[in-house]
Image (cartoon, rainbow over all chains, first blue to last red; front, side, top):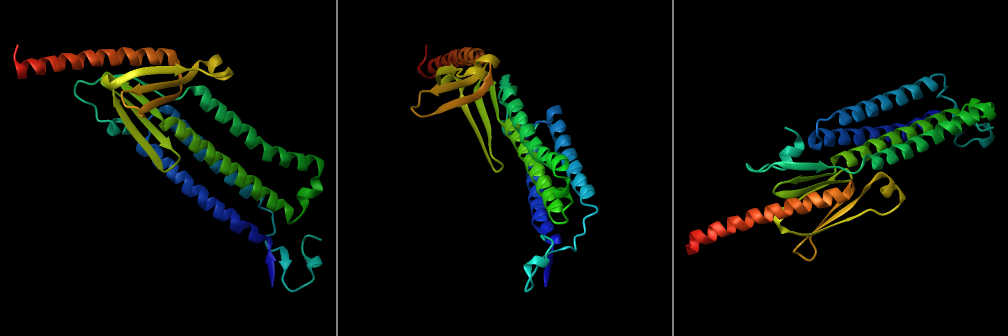
Amino acid sequence: MSITIGAFLVPYLLFLALFVVGGVVNIYHMVKFGTYTLPNYIALVIFLGGAAVMIWGTIALLAGVEWATPLLTIGSDPTTTSFQ
Amino acid sequence: MTSIARLISRKPYETQVFALRRHWVILAAHVFEYLVLAAIPIGVYVFFQEAMPDFLNHPTLYPLIILTVSASELGLLLLLFTMFLDYQLDLWVVTNDRLISIEQLGLFARTVAELDLWRIQDVTSDVQGIFPTLFGYGNVHVQTAGATERFILEQVPDPYEVRKIILDMADLDRKFHQEDDAIIHKAVVGP
């Protein structure tokens, strides 16, 4: 049985879930308690735009990655992993 | 109607004198810190790209580096947004009747407190440090008759002027209350 480098995506996706929760809580605070002013709208656009650009950039940079590359093969010689 | 207006229902005779947030330099300093921190992972990536391109061609390390840089940048962006909200949602409002303090403490805690102006006994302003002196911001401490009750308007612009206005408004409100008391006294005891 081998673990592929696709395993790196698990903590990243967990982090993304936390990021989304944090973002939603912040936007909720902004809508519920904030004043409806231009700086608030600008901050919201920067936050959502920045997050979209970073996630899009990450997907674009990782487009060619072969996620099935074995990272670790359990029960075999460790020198056969991609860390050779 | 803003949410702040909902939080502090205005009395019929009440008018807002001013509303204060922390000085803009405080926000600018946080944004600068964020930009420096955000540049570090990108700088490290560019360094590896230029100095050790083979390192980035590694089938395992490359995705690991990209995912780490992406997560750190997203985390910093969320921190910056949270910090901006903390700055934006902290507010001190002075009306002709009371001083209202609205403070956001992290994501899930919020304090709204108010103080009748006529109860104010002492107002102190302090500007300490190089940046507060250069940019003209500082703290204003408001003390009432109670031993412990104290409002602090933190890092507000022009603290000396704020102190003066609060003291003037407190004097006016005190006079108004004394006249009110005299009218009530006359009505109860007689002329």
